[in-house]
Image (cartoon, each protein chain N blue to C red):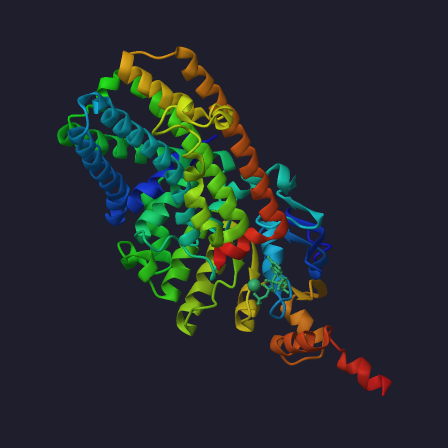
Length: 265
Length: 259
Ligand SMILES: Nc1ncnc2c1ncn2[C@@H]1O[C@H](COP(=O)(O)OP(=O)(O)OP(=O)(O)O)[C@@H](O)[C@H]1O
Ligand SMILES: [Mg+2]
């Protein structure tokens, strides 16, 4: 691993953001729209039903913000790779002394930068607009964000692998991947509210533990520590699996000669 | 001639074979490139030149066969080899949405170039594109962006350089300048270059030795003058056309005697 190589690749993405401010807008536009729409809906529900319902708004907004963290991490990884595809730069990178791990690390770092920006913007809006201070979650936020980011990275690698194998035809599928998991990971409802048969599936994925933990922290101020460890362990497993898939597909594209085909198309 | 060459072999292919769904793009292709030598790879469209280069750069895996660079097996030492090599093609581009200077700076960092700013400025002056530094890469003309690609290819002072049709989109004046620059840098630094082009003037001026490929097979090899003489053709272009049409050079003198 060469840190200079990784920082050079990250620099390339930073140049992109400075060159086209629209990319920054894209980074905050949808999260803000989501937050404002659902924030208003929950406030509306809150006002027109009994006050007990109050905690609902917190759960909902918390779930929304944390979900967005994971989604942005996944997008950060996939977009970084797609930028190289869109700009026909992939060949230059692959004939340079860049290890796969260095390339992937750079996309991870971009993913991390994106979620930091998203997190700050969403936190500010929810605080000012809905008196929902994400920081009531205090230092719990750190393991929450970290675990969601790791799973986002793993999904990002899967998206990248799909695009490598099937080209730009797989792009929309690559965007949709996190949403395959959304129903299963208990973002907006508790695992116990899910059908009994679906509950064991929910516990297979790291984000479930985080969303359950978030609700617990909001309600009683603490959570089951083992959830964090299980989530972390599962994340390592999924990251390894995604990394293996990516490496396997990369090798396959070299074998089939696909790398050059779509890098120059 | 190649056999008696005592210079260090910096790139070698042994029996490279590459099939694409039944099409043979490279057919037991073997050659050696020496330090300080410019080797031209010639052949009709689809002859296998780009495939050969892609295999030699590790972008495409050969179906069988071995590649050695600087005496090392390519696939075990890919990163170390790529650090000492570089590549440029008329058909790839640097990211169009960045400034030329930003792109070059990123690649200079990737290659770990010591005094980046100075190196980039020197190379841009050499290729007469110093004025393009603050331009958006995607807005350059084809010839301008080809020269920016060449700057990228020279950034790490490569010992081994692969150029796939570097003059494809250049006007005669710029093409001439680019050939001279390539030759100059190559001689100063004693670089080994693998060069493809459809422009025979390019080949005659730049290449010490050429290999003719036909359907992935080597059909003829030697210095340009030697090949022209051997095939009793008037020019290298005639040789090219004969090979492209017949798949071999028909030795006119031998044919005359037979009839
Ligand atoms: N990824 C690929 N998949 C399938 N066939 C391929 C692939 N790459 C190359 N080929 C085939 O291999 C053969 C050699 O192609 P190649 O691009 O190496 O030719 P070339 O000599 O560079 O031609 P040109 O002068 O047109 O650039 C062609 O028949 C081509 O169709
Ligand atoms: Mg070609």
